[in-house]
Amino acid sequence: MAAKKDDTADESAAGMETATLAGGCFWCLEAIFLQLKGVIKVVSGYSGGETENPTYQEICSGTTGHAEVVQITFDPREISFKDLLNVFFTMHDPTTLNRQGADRGTQYRSAIFYHTSNQQRDAEETVRNLDQSQTWDNPVVTEIAPFSDFYPAENYHQDYFSNNSGEPYCRLVIEPKVAKLRKHFIERLKKESTEPSR
Image 1 (spheres, rainbow, N blue to C red):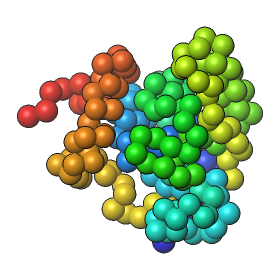
Image 2: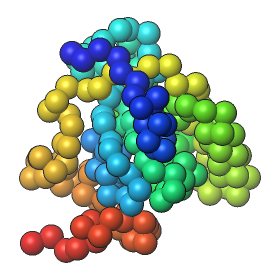
Image 3: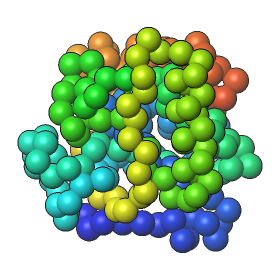
């Protein structure tokens, strides 16, 4: 298992920023954010827990405190953190505590692990606006917490949707989310993401 990793210093030097988001299964979030213009890289992994170098099996037990997350490297000149949050809150239900669909447990909680005070402000403002506008029937329960560490998930979790598109979970759970992304955010997609599949 890879050790904890934080490349944010190198990314900042190149003008890139990092976002770490949790909203259920990381396979879904990875498939979504990879398609956005301005997103350079998306890595599935684990954040927000106590255990060092957790394995997927340990995460699934719900005892490590970690959430399944995606760590997103993005170019703020093309897409802002607020833009990412807009997609994030459209693509999952932030009102269900420790659950997304059939996935249940603290590892599937909705969370924003902010890297800067600006990200914290944007996250708190976005949640406040969502609650005030009553976008959802119930209050948003998304955790907003400082980023502490990130452990990349095992290799077979990376690029999961593109490598396993024929699997039932991909067809029944991830594909509808990708279709929703294309419906609501067509103008934000990379050109290859808008071309019809052959």
